[in-house]
Length: 499
View 1 (cartoon, rainbow, N blue to C red):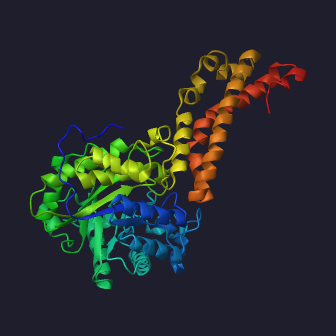
View 2 (view 1 turned 90 degrees about the vertical axis):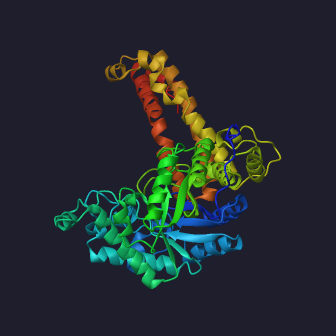
View 3 (view 1 turned 120 degrees about the horizontal axis):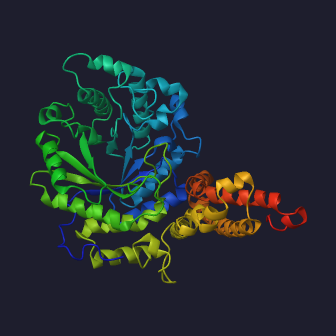
């Protein structure tokens, strides 16, 4: 990989403040022993804390037990405590994140809780008018906070509250002159935040900022959030608009919301189905955040930055990059913040710490020296890169577009059974060879993946990222077999149609 910032002047290192690594556990939850190893690595790479988003992997109890995952076994209470113990031993703070308004798909998908949706067809947004919804959120917060006795901060989410104001009760509420959707949002968030402050007076509260971006100065100042929450402004774009981001931070600070965080990304923000992380893209995002920090006027205090690592775009979407594929990106991003650029020194720190010769995971698999120390999960990263390269190859992805399929094995030919046995046999051989290669690599990936993740994660990953790609190939194979049985004498076809 090129030294990304070699042609630009170094910026000041990230201002004094915390660097948090975000753990998104709503998909591909690591086995607890692997998670412990990752926490140790985070510390060694320069992180100060972890921002843990459990969703349905938290061991909710009582009436909330329904929220526990049925796909994977949730972490036990002992395991949640062990995460904190290992983090503490590594000098890392643990901040739990609990969604309290938007992105509540893991809650509102349950039939018994359908009535708490803002609108029936949107699983993510809570109806802010229902007392039972507020009590549900309060109980979720209580259980999570009490199982994190050493935490001094709590993140209450509140991003992307889609379709707020479109529910029947909200439309009725908004029919009163002067009321707005912004006020509706603020009324729920301030109620939740004040409840947290009353229950745990010394607990700092963080929330995402995006629902506040369109609010004017007076609305922000009179929001009820001043002195109550710390805003975390997120932007994962490698071409982040520095000027606009500085302006937004100035607006928040000028309205009294002066305790501010940034949020970048080291994975999970490229595409909903991305499997292999681009280090370049995410280092660029952090270089933009360094420009923001350097351009801020004195008096604006950044408490830190959270490096987010999304495992799904939301609770119902496919898995994106697994953590092992993103560790070079995470290490490079942290070192970029530390050095003010991705300098040769920063790059050297990453390659030595991880035992790799390239910080791009796609190249890492083929350019590693034999005596390198494996970072936790590296073998899985290599295998996924290899399998992904096969799945993205022209030969496989465009098999149905090759000359022989388009010329002699179209749907027209198959339906009318006017197929050349010679061509069908050739296609069958090609399809069988490709499928055998994929199946061999899938078996290797699954074997390694179940060492780090639940077997259900391995199965989900294969069904989401492999099965759709090979399905057309499998259809061609099935059709060639059927065609050969139809077009070739029985005593000959048995040896031609394969196993």
